[in-house]
Figure 1 (cartoon, helix red, strand yellow):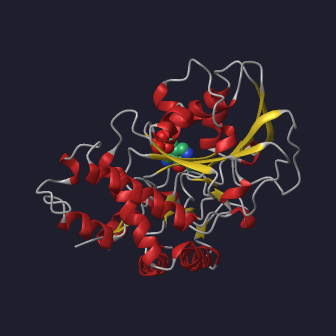
Figure 2 (spheres, protein in one colour):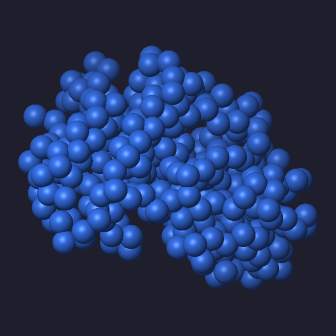
Length: 360
Ligand code: PMP
């Protein structure tokens, strides 16, 4: 029996995708082999990777002058890959700090010989909000402005695309990519670990505007060098083949289910249902300022933390798993990525209502 899995990542994947992968696991496209066992240089896998990229491009509406790269090392590797590819020693770079993931990106940038300017910092709010639109200014000599549209731990999401002027906008979209339509043309670079909305861990997708290529420092490891990886179709070395294959299945699943418009409507309805239940109760609390609430990661606390363990045990018994909040925030966190159906959110809300009625 499948449970409703609220994990922040690696996260629940769409059942039809898992079933398809299972059905062809031992004999993929008539090869008599698993996709796990074929050469990444063989024509079947090269076609599979090309189809994954083409389908992702269609689903996201990626303009022609952007390259799509399939890299490894997670989003964390790109915290270093971005400064290495886009800066020279002494350059200025700008960051918005809205949570633990943006803070990690800032920390990595500070390891380089750069002037790192944090143009808005929400640490003082314990990362419960995003900066007001228009409230910060970006140094126009900065090589890029980096931000995290959705902070997975704090459950804080930007409701707008920051205006960086002529500065290239760089987004760590790990936990929001594919959750709703996104205007790629507003960005210089978008990157995301796959393990939330795009597939299994081990793959990081980088979408980069072509004019930003060709500037990598000579010290950049080749596997992080966007220009060299792009020239080699992301196959300078062995790519994470299974993850690329699964990304392709997920992109087709999205396309078959109405694309990002339809996904965005479903995700809005799911988030409204869950926040509505939290707000209607005095027992559950979400700390995030309303305009900055995430559609994907919903942290909430119980009025009495002594009941946390019982809440989690009962949830597990009801088939609702991985609700324990991040250790730094406490309480609960429900991650409701694309693969979580509204029925799963309704089951969680029903359970929360019952728990409050019997235990509060
Ligand atoms: N950025 C965000 C927003 C994340 O949620 C995560 C992972 N949870 C990371 C970066 C780090 O990703 P990875 O583990 O793939 O390096």
